[in-house]
Image 1 (cartoon, rainbow over the protein chains, first blue to last red):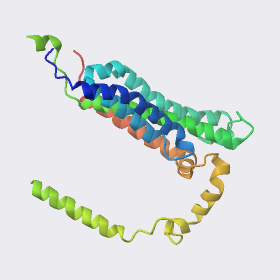
Image 2: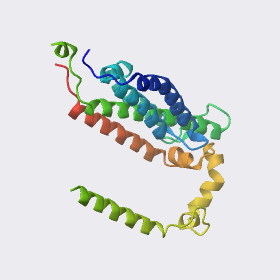
Image 3: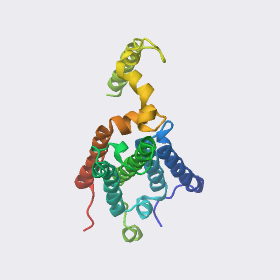
Image 4: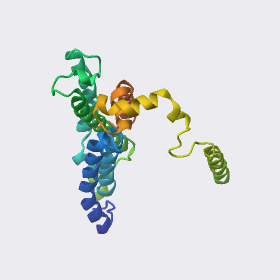
Length: 150
Length: 91
Protein backbone atom coordinates (compact mmCIF):
# COMPACT_ATOMS: atom_id res chain seq x y z
CA UNK A 1 0.00 0.00 0.00
CA UNK A 2 1.50 3.27 -1.11
CA UNK A 3 -1.37 5.34 0.24
CA UNK A 4 -0.27 7.74 2.95
CA UNK A 5 -1.78 6.79 6.30
CA UNK A 6 -2.23 9.09 9.22
CA UNK A 7 -0.50 8.12 12.45
CA UNK A 8 -2.11 5.53 14.71
CA UNK A 9 -2.73 8.13 17.41
CA UNK A 10 -4.79 10.34 15.10
CA UNK A 11 -6.74 7.39 13.74
CA UNK A 12 -7.55 6.03 17.20
CA UNK A 13 -8.59 9.40 18.59
CA UNK A 14 -10.81 10.11 15.59
CA UNK A 15 -12.40 6.66 15.81
CA UNK A 16 -13.23 7.33 19.48
CA UNK A 17 -14.34 10.94 18.98
CA UNK A 18 -16.66 10.59 15.97
CA UNK A 19 -19.57 8.87 17.81
CA UNK A 20 -19.48 11.50 20.54
CA UNK A 21 -19.48 14.34 18.00
CA UNK A 22 -22.49 12.75 16.34
CA UNK A 23 -24.25 12.35 19.69
CA UNK A 24 -23.57 16.01 20.50
CA UNK A 25 -24.97 16.97 17.09
CA UNK A 26 -28.19 15.09 17.80
CA UNK A 27 -28.37 16.81 21.20
CA UNK A 28 -27.96 20.23 19.59
CA UNK A 29 -30.72 19.49 17.07
CA UNK A 30 -33.17 18.17 19.66
CA UNK A 31 -32.33 20.88 22.20
CA UNK A 32 -33.15 23.70 19.78
CA UNK A 33 -36.62 24.22 21.27
CA UNK A 34 -35.47 24.82 24.83
CA UNK A 35 -31.99 26.31 24.58
CA UNK A 36 -29.19 27.29 22.26
CA UNK A 37 -29.14 25.05 19.23
CA UNK A 38 -31.18 24.13 16.23
CA UNK A 39 -31.22 22.30 12.96
CA UNK A 40 -28.59 24.36 11.15
CA UNK A 41 -25.99 24.13 13.91
CA UNK A 42 -26.60 20.46 14.70
CA UNK A 43 -26.54 19.51 11.03
CA UNK A 44 -23.21 21.24 10.55
CA UNK A 45 -21.73 19.45 13.59
CA UNK A 46 -22.98 16.07 12.33
CA UNK A 47 -21.57 16.77 8.86
CA UNK A 48 -18.26 17.82 10.40
CA UNK A 49 -18.02 14.44 12.17
CA UNK A 50 -18.34 12.55 8.87
CA UNK A 51 -15.94 14.99 7.16
CA UNK A 52 -13.39 14.44 9.96
CA UNK A 53 -13.71 10.68 9.47
CA UNK A 54 -13.23 11.03 5.70
CA UNK A 55 -10.22 13.32 6.14
CA UNK A 56 -8.39 10.82 8.35
CA UNK A 57 -9.41 7.48 6.81
CA UNK A 58 -9.63 8.59 3.18
CA UNK A 59 -12.37 9.68 0.83
CA UNK A 60 -13.30 6.15 -0.23
CA UNK A 61 -13.69 5.02 3.39
CA UNK A 62 -15.81 8.09 4.07
CA UNK A 63 -18.01 7.34 1.08
CA UNK A 64 -18.66 3.89 2.54
CA UNK A 65 -20.26 5.66 5.51
CA UNK A 66 -22.14 8.22 3.42
CA UNK A 67 -22.48 7.32 -0.24
CA UNK A 68 -23.34 9.82 -2.99
CA UNK A 69 -26.77 8.29 -3.51
CA UNK A 70 -27.55 8.47 0.24
CA UNK A 71 -26.41 12.10 0.19
CA UNK A 72 -28.89 13.04 -2.50
CA UNK A 73 -31.71 11.12 -0.81
CA UNK A 74 -31.06 12.72 2.60
CA UNK A 75 -30.74 16.26 1.22
CA UNK A 76 -34.14 16.05 -0.44
CA UNK A 77 -35.68 14.11 2.48
CA UNK A 78 -34.97 16.92 4.94
CA UNK A 79 -36.58 19.54 2.75
CA UNK A 80 -39.53 17.22 2.14
CA UNK A 81 -40.04 16.79 5.90
CA UNK A 82 -40.14 20.56 6.31
CA UNK A 83 -42.45 21.27 3.39
CA UNK A 84 -44.57 18.20 4.26
CA UNK A 85 -45.12 19.56 7.77
CA UNK A 86 -46.41 22.76 6.23
CA UNK A 87 -48.68 20.88 3.84
CA UNK A 88 -50.01 18.73 6.70
CA UNK A 89 -51.12 21.93 8.44
CA UNK A 90 -53.09 22.83 5.30
CA UNK A 91 -54.71 19.38 5.31
CA UNK A 92 -55.96 19.96 8.87
CA UNK A 93 -57.55 23.23 7.86
CA UNK A 94 -54.89 25.74 8.85
CA UNK A 95 -52.59 27.92 6.81
CA UNK A 96 -49.22 26.79 5.45
CA UNK A 97 -46.97 25.98 8.46
CA UNK A 98 -49.66 27.00 10.96
CA UNK A 99 -48.75 24.40 13.58
CA UNK A 100 -51.69 25.15 15.90
CA UNK A 101 -54.13 23.76 13.35
CA UNK A 102 -52.97 20.14 13.71
CA UNK A 103 -55.31 18.50 16.29
CA UNK A 104 -52.96 15.72 17.47
CA UNK A 105 -52.95 16.79 21.14
CA UNK A 106 -55.45 18.88 23.11
CA UNK A 107 -52.95 21.68 23.75
CA UNK A 108 -52.04 23.50 20.49
CA UNK A 109 -48.84 24.90 22.03
CA UNK A 110 -47.54 21.38 22.67
CA UNK A 111 -48.39 20.35 19.10
CA UNK A 112 -46.48 23.40 17.91
CA UNK A 113 -43.47 22.40 20.04
CA UNK A 114 -43.31 18.90 18.57
CA UNK A 115 -43.80 20.13 15.02
CA UNK A 116 -41.01 22.68 15.54
CA UNK A 117 -38.80 19.76 16.63
CA UNK A 118 -39.81 17.86 13.46
CA UNK A 119 -38.98 20.87 11.31
CA UNK A 120 -35.59 21.23 13.03
CA UNK A 121 -34.85 17.57 12.28
CA UNK A 122 -35.66 18.21 8.62
CA UNK A 123 -33.33 21.22 8.53
CA UNK A 124 -30.59 19.16 10.21
CA UNK A 125 -30.85 16.31 7.70
CA UNK A 126 -30.64 18.67 4.73
CA UNK A 127 -27.72 20.64 6.16
CA UNK A 128 -25.65 17.57 7.07
CA UNK A 129 -26.19 15.98 3.65
CA UNK A 130 -25.26 19.19 1.81
CA UNK A 131 -22.16 19.68 4.02
CA UNK A 132 -20.90 16.19 3.29
CA UNK A 133 -21.68 16.36 -0.42
CA UNK A 134 -19.85 19.70 -0.73
CA UNK A 135 -16.78 18.15 0.92
CA UNK A 136 -16.82 15.09 -1.32
CA UNK A 137 -17.42 17.19 -4.46
CA UNK A 138 -14.38 19.43 -3.95
CA UNK A 139 -12.04 16.72 -2.60
CA UNK A 140 -9.31 15.54 -4.97
CA UNK A 141 -9.71 12.08 -6.51
CA UNK A 142 -7.81 9.28 -4.83
CA UNK A 143 -5.29 7.32 -6.90
CA UNK A 144 -6.58 3.96 -8.03
CA UNK A 145 -5.06 0.96 -6.20
CA UNK A 146 -4.00 -0.65 -9.49
CA UNK A 147 -2.10 2.46 -10.57
CA UNK A 148 -0.41 2.70 -7.19
CA UNK A 149 0.98 -0.81 -7.47
CA UNK A 150 2.51 -0.29 -10.90
CA UNK B 1 0.60 40.72 -1.86
CA UNK B 2 0.67 39.28 1.66
CA UNK B 3 1.43 42.72 3.05
CA UNK B 4 -1.55 44.15 1.19
CA UNK B 5 -3.81 41.39 2.53
CA UNK B 6 -2.59 41.98 6.09
CA UNK B 7 -3.14 45.72 5.62
CA UNK B 8 -6.73 45.17 4.44
CA UNK B 9 -7.46 42.79 7.33
CA UNK B 10 -6.04 45.15 9.94
CA UNK B 11 -7.90 48.17 8.54
CA UNK B 12 -11.18 46.24 8.36
CA UNK B 13 -10.74 44.94 11.89
CA UNK B 14 -9.98 48.42 13.22
CA UNK B 15 -13.08 49.80 11.49
CA UNK B 16 -15.25 47.05 12.96
CA UNK B 17 -13.89 47.60 16.47
CA UNK B 18 -14.46 51.35 16.08
CA UNK B 19 -18.04 50.77 14.90
CA UNK B 20 -18.61 48.30 17.72
CA UNK B 21 -18.22 51.12 20.28
CA UNK B 22 -21.62 52.47 19.20
CA UNK B 23 -23.49 49.21 19.84
CA UNK B 24 -25.83 49.28 22.84
CA UNK B 25 -24.57 47.47 25.92
CA UNK B 26 -25.65 43.87 26.56
CA UNK B 27 -29.07 43.90 28.20
CA UNK B 28 -29.44 47.67 27.78
CA UNK B 29 -33.09 48.56 28.32
CA UNK B 30 -32.80 51.63 26.08
CA UNK B 31 -31.53 49.74 23.03
CA UNK B 32 -33.70 50.20 19.91
CA UNK B 33 -34.39 46.48 19.53
CA UNK B 34 -35.82 46.33 23.05
CA UNK B 35 -37.90 49.46 22.54
CA UNK B 36 -39.60 48.02 19.45
CA UNK B 37 -43.25 47.13 20.15
CA UNK B 38 -42.96 43.61 18.72
CA UNK B 39 -40.24 42.72 21.25
CA UNK B 40 -42.64 43.00 24.17
CA UNK B 41 -45.22 40.94 22.29
CA UNK B 42 -42.78 38.11 21.61
CA UNK B 43 -41.41 38.08 25.17
CA UNK B 44 -44.91 37.89 26.64
CA UNK B 45 -46.68 35.59 24.17
CA UNK B 46 -44.17 33.36 22.39
CA UNK B 47 -44.28 30.60 25.05
CA UNK B 48 -48.07 30.30 25.00
CA UNK B 49 -48.33 30.53 21.23
CA UNK B 50 -45.46 28.31 20.14
CA UNK B 51 -44.77 26.11 23.17
CA UNK B 52 -40.98 26.51 23.08
CA UNK B 53 -39.01 28.30 25.77
CA UNK B 54 -36.34 29.56 23.37
CA UNK B 55 -37.66 32.78 21.86
CA UNK B 56 -35.11 32.62 19.03
CA UNK B 57 -36.40 29.20 18.00
CA UNK B 58 -39.99 30.39 18.37
CA UNK B 59 -39.26 33.23 15.94
CA UNK B 60 -37.19 31.11 13.56
CA UNK B 61 -39.43 28.06 13.33
CA UNK B 62 -42.90 29.43 14.12
CA UNK B 63 -43.42 33.12 13.39
CA UNK B 64 -40.94 33.16 10.49
CA UNK B 65 -41.18 29.53 9.50
CA UNK B 66 -41.77 30.38 5.86
CA UNK B 67 -38.49 32.29 5.82
CA UNK B 68 -36.64 29.34 7.32
CA UNK B 69 -38.16 27.01 4.72
CA UNK B 70 -36.68 29.31 2.09
CA UNK B 71 -33.27 29.22 3.79
CA UNK B 72 -33.31 25.42 3.81
CA UNK B 73 -34.28 25.44 0.13
CA UNK B 74 -31.38 27.79 -0.60
CA UNK B 75 -28.91 25.42 1.10
CA UNK B 76 -30.41 22.45 -0.75
CA UNK B 77 -30.22 24.28 -4.10
CA UNK B 78 -26.61 25.35 -3.49
CA UNK B 79 -25.63 21.77 -2.67
CA UNK B 80 -27.36 20.42 -5.76
CA UNK B 81 -25.69 23.09 -7.96
CA UNK B 82 -22.22 22.23 -6.66
CA UNK B 83 -23.02 18.54 -7.14
CA UNK B 84 -24.06 19.10 -10.76
CA UNK B 85 -21.06 21.29 -11.60
CA UNK B 86 -18.20 19.59 -9.75
CA UNK B 87 -19.09 15.93 -9.21
CA UNK B 88 -16.91 13.59 -11.25
CA UNK B 89 -18.97 11.03 -13.07
CA UNK B 90 -17.74 7.45 -12.98
CA UNK B 91 -17.27 6.56 -16.63
